[in-house]
Image (cartoon, rainbow, N blue to C red):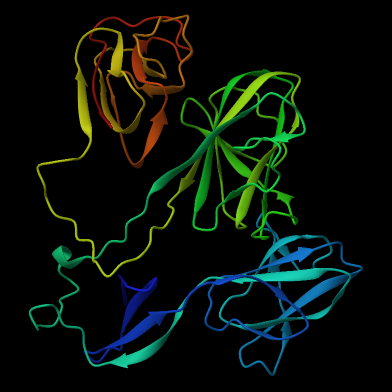
Length: 395
């Protein structure tokens, strides 16, 4: 069993049980930043579980990769593509995943260059035992001594453009994108009134953003909470839709390849961006301050949850009616006009039933959060006062 906790110096200390009452200390290595690589030269990735390579340029001879446990005996291996496919050879430019914890190299390939990036692991160093500040051995089975690492949701920016052949960025003519090297995912919400648009999400492993851009796939989330996967390059046609993207590179950009009219805006957030590590250990403790706010509603069929920008972290909804009802959520600071205003999120509640959900990462609403109860999913017909009783958690 492994136990992990952060220490100073941007390192992660890990302890492994040796099965004899002692533990082995594992000191984390730093990740290997994207670096040029002569792929026919063996690369020692035995200490890295995650290995990615970017092929820059069009190969004239397909690249065939090999792996080895000892760096002497080699076997051809499969590589992973951006869409999860397994490939026996690489014939096009792109970003690919190689087997981790091995030596890697290419058996053949020509006409392109390679950039390699690795994720960190560590090497065990013997430790007799782990003791707490009181000098006694730490009991890892005790829930009160569980260590947690902090994560965060960081707003990268709200950017707009009214022209094709530009970028959704602080500078619409800047093709270098934004930094995602410390993110585990990217969330993008499209806003505004526009037509004839086509926005292509792209990433690269080039830290400068000067080259190596490739379209990526994402997950599209709809107002009713459902989602569907879509490939890079699809047109974004509905205001308020949110997309989430995995991180394959170190920079990302949103290229507007077409826009007939209007202004399109993108609200970009980096998911689980890792903060600087410190010598402190975060421990969850009860407190009477901070936390989310609660709005409880027992009457009426519309209203305002928060008059300013906020985030929803969960809800508990009971339907007192024998027919299905829908809780509609709106991004506005006044009570919605049912049948006129368009909801940004719809929560169906079964007949005489309930619906409950809690989100550790909030759902953002701007410029405010309002609600209504309707008898239809589209939000055209108002429900009666008291059809639902609900509480929402917000900040």
